Image (tube, rainbow over all chains, first blue to last red; front, side, top):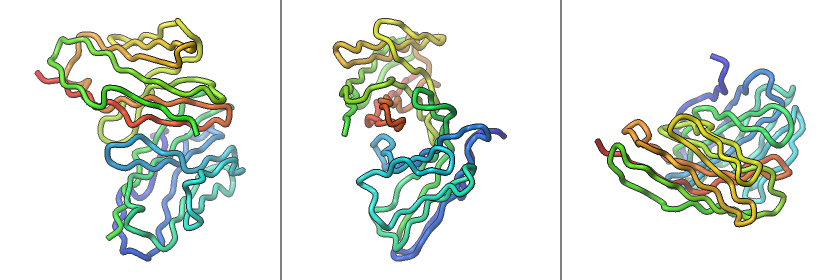
Length: 114
Length: 110
């Protein structure tokens, strides 16, 4: 399978715990994006990378969230001290080239904070 | 930040009907307008529009962009139950990220 892969697909955690998600983009794609989606809303931009450089981070993203893409390949998104409001689908997408190309999405990681 | 507004929020039709979904956007640093279909999990790409007045077509689906009115429509003709999904519109900016609308939920009844 050469699509965008996300792991885990589902995560249930207790409030206050840390969680980490992984995204493996399509192999030749240099851009990688993280979005968050809650029920009834469209994906909301969190952050994106071009190769290993994190180029933009949403102002909505608190400092409990951090993302890395250490070698310009896979990426991780960590949420520290999770809160119930963090419950959502976390989507990863990748694209090739610069700005005017479509992004291909992974199946997402559904996070439930109890 | 740019805002993308889709209408209607939801739509119920019968098989064979034609539907038109609407998307309006703001212009700051606009590069392209994209349409995605989301069934259960991942949004899947449908169209990317960059120029006004040029229709993109794929089977029963078509889309067009009006950069003067900051508007795009997605048409689906002869709808089928398999067209039932959330249709998302997104604006790509110079920064490369996409700003999504909240989607139109289409339900096609047999």
